Amino acid sequence: MSGSIEQYDVAYIGQALPDDELSQVTIPVSALTECRGEIGDFTLSFQAEDDLKQVRASNIVINLKHQEELPVDCCTSLLEAEANLAEEEEPLIIVQDYQDLSAAALSKEGLELALEVKESNPAREVYYFYQAMRFMDNNDELYEKAREKEVIFLKHDLGDLEITDKGKVSYQREDIKLELTGELTVAPELKPAAKLDKLARIFNITRGPEGYLQVDNIYLQPTLSGKRGVYLLAGARGPNSLTYEQEEIQYTLQEVKRNLTGVEEIDEEERTVDDQKCVVCYTCYRLCPHGAIQRDEELNSMKIMPLACQACNLCISRCPMGAISRSGEDEQQPKDERQVIICENSAALAREKAETDPFADTVVTEVPCVSTVKKEEIYQRLANHKSDLLILGCISESCKHLTGHDRCEQVVNTAKEDLEKLDLDPDRVNYHRLSPRMATDLSAYLADWKGEVLQ
Ligand code: SF4
Ligand code: SF4
Image (tube, rainbow, N blue to C red; front, side, top):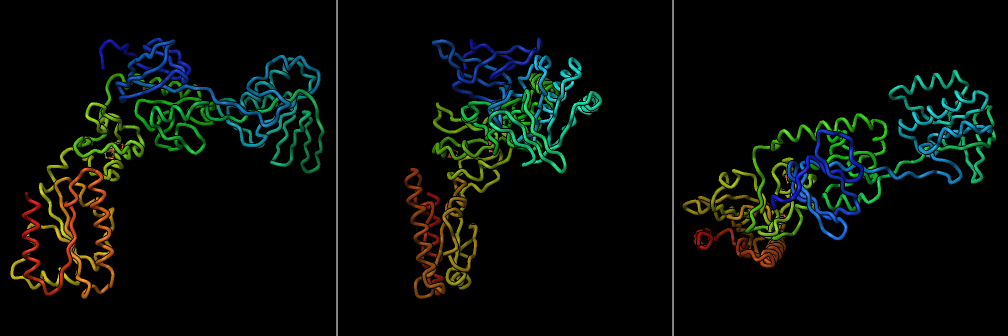
């Protein structure tokens, strides 16, 4: 990438965090079009007026507000309720957890509001409905103070409390029955920030079941995303992010600064894609949980970014072409591995009868019937691009499973077709039928096969 692109310590998507030590750029979600690279060197493309602009950043922080949804229309959101409520004479009704339990930060907002109103207008009635009071920071202190100031706390469960569309509150629990009207303020439900689907696509990060960019994984707490160097706050991170907002901001800034002093690869062995084998099917790109794979346009192949890779090896196990390997793996594997799968009812018997072992220098697997060989196994065995596979089944008369040899032949033929479609040599897998009495034929056939393979 050109050296003329501006370089920053951190790129904020959404709202920036105040910190004088970091050089920073802020990009609105709507303007962002692409992100490539890995921790320490991301390149972000975005629309700036009529131009497509690019910047480089060592870290990315996605900091977006939650979307708020009120469970009823006829009320003010607890996050927007102002102290002017204190000037009213009618009761103040605060409802927390109307449908779902609210984040602890909303308990704090509610308690502070109740106290503020009572302190400025002690005669005003304040009702506080809640299912579970969440104690964090000084919430317990606020709660005690609010009780001393005669805030009326009423615990509710689902069904005890109903708010009508005219803002009337009905409450019935054991021997208490209340019908209330007044200034109504309700804790909003917090929803994932808008446009997270777009960000998930751009950063290749998986969204959790609730739609946030962070999958609920204790190892990823508190603000790490699945992708190294990309951090999530507030409405990008999850419903509890409000509760520990300040701590999470501090943690994120510390991590960002720590990354600037250097980032090490997680595993010494590097995963690499063989561009001669990669057919750009995007399987690995879609599967990598850490967004560590991107397309190399010049090579027309995928490439793995070593600092982003977290060494899970998922890509290696799923690449249909066996194009991904760990460093050193190639050397450990046989250079020209010849593998044979033999049926115990035919080739295995013929082998026993042969004077010298026809399978010397060959990796042999004996199976009760070749019909058990599946296409996936064939691909797995061909994953090393220097390997070839021969499957030896029975002739019809000696197949104890009647149609096992036919089924295997069909599987091999389909595998051959697949290899052909991918521009690979279909003769890397072969199928041959053998009678148990054909020890001589077996040796001759194997000699031919080995000769062809070696060419
Ligand atoms: S899964 Fe394998 S073949 Fe497909 S894009 Fe990835 S490296 Fe290439
Ligand atoms: S090993 Fe895991 S983290 Fe690394 S590129 Fe493959 S799938 Fe992604």
